[in-house]
Amino acid sequence: MKAKGKKSGSAHSRRSGPDLREVSEILDFMEKHGLEEFEYENGNFHVRLRKAQPHSSMPFRAVHSAPEIIEAQPSAVSTTAPEQGASAPPLESLDKNLHVIKSPIVGTFYSSPTPSADPFVRAGDHVKSGQVLCIIEAMKLMNEIEADVAGEVMRVFVENGQPVEYGEPLFAIHPSRKQ
Amino acid sequence: MFRKILIANRGEIALRVLCACQEMGIQTVAVYSEADRNSLHVRFADESVCIGPARSSESYLNIPHVISAAEITNVEAIHPGYGFLSENANFAEVCEASHITFIGPSPEVIRMMGEKDRARREMGAAGLPIIPGSPGVVPDEDTALKLAGEIGYPVLIKAAEGGGGRGMRVVHEKGELISAFQTARNESQQAFGSANVYLEKLIERPRHIEFQVIGDRRGNVMHLRERECSIQRRHQKIIEESPSPVLDAKTRDEMGTRVAKALAKIGYSSAGTVEFLRDEASGKMYFIEVNARIQVEHPVTEMISGVDLVKAQIRLAAGEKLDDVIGKPRFHGHAIECRINAEDPDTFAPSAGRITAFRVPGGPGIRVDTALYSEAVVPPYYDSLVAKLIALGDDRAEAIARMSRALDQFVIEGIKTSISLHKKILEDPDFIAGRFDTHFLDRYEAVAAR
Image (cartoon, rainbow over all chains, first blue to last red):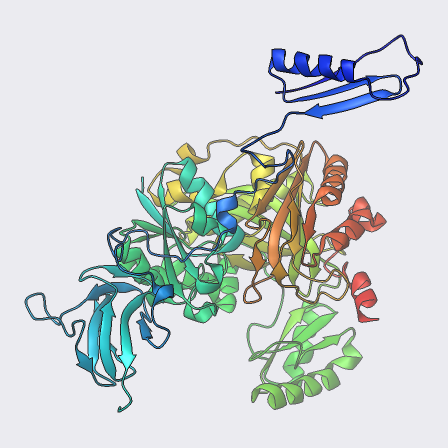
C-alpha cells in the first residue's frame, strides 16, 4: 500500500539537513499503518522512504505484457497425450549425431501397415534408406513415410494413432556409414 | 451452434475470429506455419497445429494440411478469414466433402465471383450498373471506332489476356483511337502472345465505394451501407471510412437495395463486399467486383452499425435466420480505419524485425485490431499489415481528430510503420474536405520517388 503525505502551511521554515528524529517518526508511522512507501515534504525537507522488499524485486513500473508469450516454447499439438515422452529425455538433449525424421504432413500416425500387423520398425531395428517407417493418414489417404538415411532406429517419438503436425519428430536414427 | 472451429488464417484476422469464437463459447483450433509459432492467436487458441514451413504455399495455402488439421482436431467448421483460402472455391468444396462447414458463401458463388468477367455479366444481368465496354474482344478498327463512340470518350483499351498496364492505352478523343488500338494490340501480342483487346469506359477520377452485404443460408440478403476506400496506393487500400463523404442518403438506399436484391438473386450467403467505382464527373456508380469474404476493413462497418460481422458469419453458417442475427441495426456516427503496415512511410519498402516497444492507444471511440505485442517478431513472409486502427466519432471531423490523436499515441518501435504517412494524409486539406479520388496518394508517391 502506498501513500503520499504533504505538510502544508508553516512554509518557508528552513531546515539544515535531514532530521533523523522526524525520519524515525515517519518510519513508526509507516509501520503502524502498514505502509510500504511514504513521501514527505515540508519546505526544504523532502524525503521518500520505501520499505525493503525481500522477495519481490519487481519494480513498480514493470511492463506485464503477458510474459508467457515472450518465452519461446516448442510447440506441440495440444491434443496429444501428455504422457508422450514425459519420462524420455527431451529432443534438445539427444545426441547431435542423431538424424531426426520429422513429419512432412499433418495427419494421424500409424506404426503398422494394418491394425493387426506388426509395426514397420521398432527401436533397435536397422533400416535402409528408402525403407517405409510408418504411415501417416491424411484426408483418408495413407502416406508412407520413408527413411532418408540408413541406420539404427534409436527412438520412436510418437504412438500409434497419435495425431501429428507438420515438423513433429517421429524417429531418431543413428546413421550408419554404409548406405 | 458449432462446438469447435478451425481458424485457417494468421495475424490480426485470426485473432479477430478467435475473439468471436471465445465470446460465443466455441472452442478454437489455430493452425500456423513454423514462422508463426509464437503468434498471439496460437497462444490464445484452445488447440494449435503446425501445418507447414513459413512459405504460405506450403502452409496457409496447403489445403491437405489444413483439412488434415481440421480432421485430427475434430472441428465442425472452418473460418477462412480473408486472403489465403477464403475465396478458393476448391477449398470450400473440399470442406463440404469432408463434412466441415465452410464459413462463407457456397463454392458455386465463390467461383462465380472469382471469375471477374463472369461476375460482371451476372451482376449486370441481376440489375447492377456495370462499366460500359465492349461485349468482348474487339475484332477490328471499325468496330473499335463504333464502340468507342457509343461508350463515350475517354476510353481504355485493355489486353484481354493480361494486365500490369501492358497492352493498355488511354484514348481521349476519336482521332487517337486507331493508332492506340494498333499499338495496344502489338504490345499485347508481345507481352501475352495474344493481340486480343477490349474497350472500357475510362473513369478519370474514380472514387472507390463498396457496400457491405450479409446473407443467411435461406436466401435473405441485406446491406449494411457503404465504405469509401479511395485512399489507396497501387490498388492497396490504406484508409477506409464510413459513410462516404460524397454519397447522399437517397443514393445509398437505392444502390444498397439494388445490391442486396442482386446478391439474393444469385444465392449469396455470409458476408461479402460489392465494390463500385463512382465517376466524379457524372456521379454514376459502376460495379467492379464482389469480394466473397469478410474484408480487412470490416471494423469500419462494425463501429457505425454495432453489428459484429464475424459472429454474424458464424451464426449464419450455423443456419440462423438473417433477421434474428442482424435485425435492424442503428447506424450512428462516422468511422475511419488506418491500415498500419510494417513499411517505410516514405519509400514503402517492407520492414520486418522484432518489436522493441509497443503501446496501443485507447480512449473514447478507438479500436485497435492487431496481433502484435512487445518482443513479437514480424516475419518477412507475409503481407505487411500489422495493425488496424479504427476511430469512431459523432461526425467525420471528430473521427479525424480522434484518429490523429490515436496515431500520435501509437508506439511501435523496432520496425518502420506507415503511421507517419497516415498522419500526413489526415492533415491534408483535400482529405479533410472529403475531396479525393483513387489518385489521391500519387502526391506522396512523388516524394518517395525522389
